[in-house]
Length: 246
Ligand SMILES: C[S@@+](CC[C@H](N)C(=O)[O-])C[C@H]1O[C@@H](n2cnc3c(N)ncnc32)[C@H](O)[C@@H]1O
Image (tube, rainbow, N blue to C red; front, side):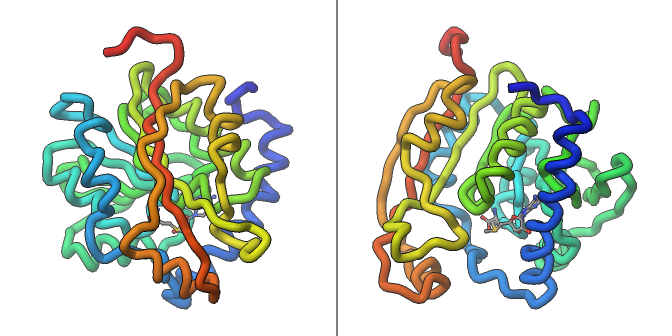
């Protein structure tokens, strides 16, 4: 699968913007029930696997919302890039974390917001169109919770192409998705069984399933789904395929 942004892809991306509209509306109503006000326990648990001994990485939070873990990794000395389509996510993150920031145009599709030392950045853009020489092939680590698992299959295909553009050769990637009975709940988030993860990531990633469990914050999903559904959070560690174990 090519990861170039070409005319055919750009046509699909135009449609993908229809999907970001729903998120922008949720953000403008501050209807962000998915947001965790504490650090994500799975990321805390598997941080060492993600960093793989590295003291200074470039880390990506795709479709980041206002996740507070971004500030934590910046405080640890890493370089952080979040990406979200909603301007409110960006503003709320910097305001709630009491961080000074400036903004500039990254390219014709993206605006970048940064703290003064430029190591903590949020790019406001449609993530599926992110294609910039300053970032392509430079992302050492990814934390995805609530991105791949909350978009449609058309968008997921573009998400994979985007990731292929952005990842550095020796990346580490934590992917957290939800699994539940999708006859009971058919909306966002979508249930992502293991076969689906293997189908989408298997051609470029070595995939290690880390755990599958009902999270402490399961009520957050059940409230949204309006059903006492058994929701599992399943996490995976992804590494480049066919490379020696670094
Ligand atoms: C379920 S929330 C998860 C946010 C965050 N990852 C978290 O764990 O709290 C999904 C986020 O993806 C953003 N989003 C959805 N589609 C997007 C796209 N195509 N490009 C950029 N952001 C997108 C939404 O604005 C929203 O903040």
